[in-house]
Image 1 (cartoon, rainbow, N blue to C red):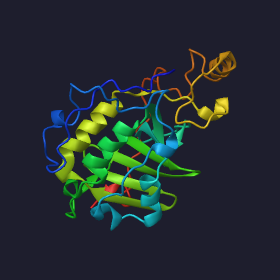
Image 2 (cartoon, rainbow, N blue to C red):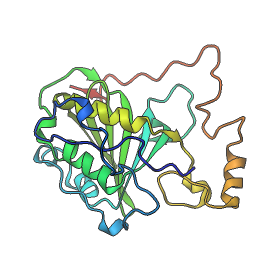
Image 3 (cartoon, rainbow, N blue to C red):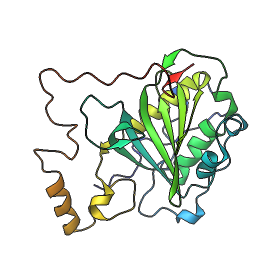
Length: 250
């Protein structure tokens, strides 16, 4: 598996108006890639500017630091875990797949349209339950901050250790929806890098030995975490969000 390239090309970003048409965020006509390739620039050259004043006033400094100084940014698709689920998880959510490592262009896109855009957010209350779609993991050394995108109930949730903060992003619904749509379309089966002794966002078979390790761990008839296997006649009900906690936007 070596698909760390964007299938959608970056278009113009109108940061001043977070309610711009979704098609304006990812469009055609640019040669830039929103995901990294093997020829990407070294990690030390990748920097993400500070988050907006709205976010910096609401999330802990340590949470923001990992975003601001991230050396790598990985993308994952997630959902609530079904009853009895025993697969990979991230922040207690079912890890459905990997959608790549963001290139500098992709990171700049998220920074300008989401993280550095005060107009994307609202302090108003919105009685809805978080619907997990994608997580961006900002890695700084051995530390990291996860940013969960929810659609509908448009919001961002920031995870850093025990610190969890959810913000209302209803004014930027068009932006959030387009990012989720574009990145979710790049989903690939998640392969644990730990199986191959790698420290990357998604394990890739680099040699024949790695291929054999993955073959033994995930034979064709039994994928690693079984999302592609046939469901029983009556699938177990999805775990319902708690009535209180980070997954309620109020």
